[in-house]
Length: 337
Image (cartoon, rainbow, N blue to C red):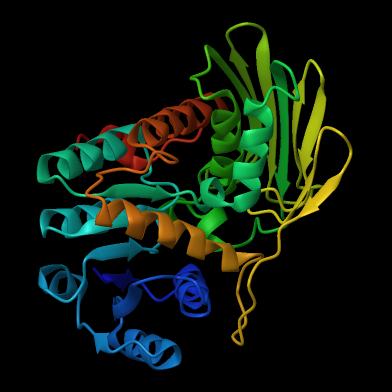
């Protein structure tokens, strides 16, 4: 069964997603077969660059076609809900870039539609499928770190002037754009919902958070401290501390290639190369997400066990709470879905 991908959008992350699939020699039986974008000329250019056979004149036309099995939604944050909904209601499986939606109500609505249609839906948190994350998870489960009590994550890049961060109408928000990586990591490690969330932040003149510090408190004295910064580059590591020692995911923790184990040894995870340049760091790793999705669809699953619907709902709830505490209000927060 060949899994046929349809690419929804023609931006940088869509380019990297297709590039990662096309250049991976062990991608299995899947193909990028179609693309659609807001501007047909951009879709045509995208298709030519990536050797995609079909260009659709609109998102609706691609959603209604019989030529794709799963849609990869890589549009800007404000369009995640409506585009994912369009493809789900047209009978297509969906992978939507993180954050799944702008708030909890939208995420809950999408998941409900997917379940009613018996379709696969996943938030594109590609970190979860990194071979390094799996190695760290195995180390934790082996008991080598003892009981995990503390997680620290830092993620910062000087991108505060980019529209997707700074402009509310584009879904701008440090917690929505970058913070989701930090939040999901704490969730990945503790596999639980925090009992208390404390957040402080810095807003721009548009009421968008550019800086966030979040403390998550869990049962049994477990805690995570997360720093998200869009004005400066931080040392973007993630450290997991247990009663027997610590393991550190080296920079860039969001999709890493180097892990310092609890015994001090350093393990490297090489990513495949591509003749085409990537827009974002370590984007070759997007292929692991695509492989997971293809395998899930072949096996008739409606969600991935590594990035579940419950995970996405908890993430949405946490991002809502962080925005509330730092004072970021979006128009969609006043609507029902």
